[in-house]
Image (tube, rainbow, N blue to C red):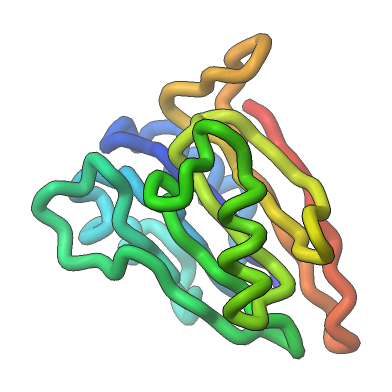
Length: 161
């Protein structure tokens, strides 16, 4: 199973469309917030049968998306949120604690516009960065591709444009 993970596109969708085109076919797209209205169009840009999981960001003022979600995938429980309610700008530790308290072994967030991949207190925590307004050194637009095998084995790949 191939999963495209993005965040903080802020309605500047050229890079998102490019990445979808490059990575197609995908089985799932996870958008971790701040789509700013594009969440209504993204399903049209992916291949048929692609599962969509999207959450509300701090700039998604007129969206009906959920603030956070828990999803099950090949024996893994994943907590997805934008992250601003968990103080991720100060570090992802609080988010990892919340995910662990919910029985999740993976936590995904956005908000900081900086890619991150690490293990905190037994929880794999990741942030794909931003495809539109990157803030890490070098400021390259970023996203992640997650591959889940039938045995539940996961491979994470950080990607840059």
